[in-house]
Length: 71
Image: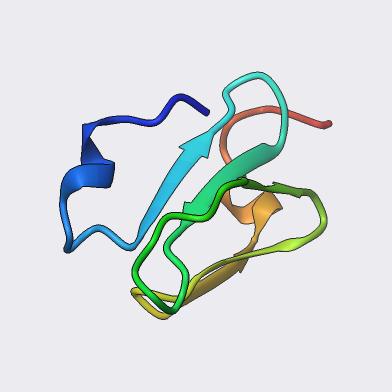
């Protein structure tokens, strides 16, 4: 994932990149000290994606429910 301007906003806690060709998302999160992690988390199906900053959790497959992707 390319680091974008959102990393400079203190209010941003997580950045999510959703793939369009396969069921996979990439997640960059701040640590407890407020620093950005040095690596991103890759979440595949059937794993659950968790965005702790907004209290959201759902299986990755739900993000692609109407996308027509099978992998």
